[in-house]
Length: 248
Ligand code: PGA
View 1 (tube, rainbow, N blue to C red):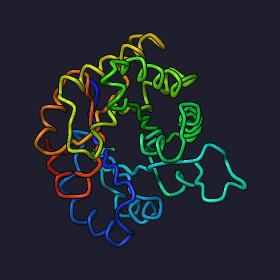
View 2 (view 1 turned 180 degrees about the vertical axis):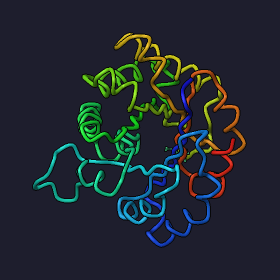
View 3 (view 1 turned 135 degrees about the vertical axis):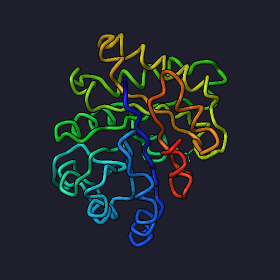
View 4 (view 1 turned 90 degrees about the vertical axis):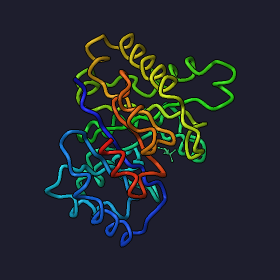
């Protein structure tokens, strides 16, 4: 039985003080061991939230990382730096990073592998655009993203550490959710791709989240689908709605 994982992607929201206040407000209500709960604030809030979350079951996640170890990469943050403030998870390949910052599957793959070297669990995002869905090419698009982003990752790491997030771009921040059936169909398809790349035991172990306008009103239905193992929550993770989603 795969344990559900619900992650809040705060994106570029909340300065440090506000981040602390909000976590203090909700942390008792989301401190559960029934699902894995992850909070992904901005880099500058990681250290302070790490202290706040110490002693809870809530895990800390980053929203990005660079794949080089160190050096002249102005503005970038290494895996070692994330590990040094107690980061357990890191989102890679979010569609906003692919769209605005030119992140490719090859870059996503390098980042995921580098995170795994330091035992930080990558949350690898994939998902099609509206045009691709309308042209019915979404399965080809997502298969390519999955194959190239996960290329060369070891079987044991796939089972233990890697999380895949299926986020159809047309459902992110738009209020337009994929139906639970559409989301489940793609998550099942991703599992089949993982089975072809590795084997059925890896496919059954890897956790696949859905993301895109998840809110309290749809969380229960989405999280009860057979192949959906959690949610990556954007807008609704910034409010008390996150508490309701975690307690779906
Ligand atoms: P949303 O964002 O929940 O605001 O649609 C999801 C995401 O981008 O991870």
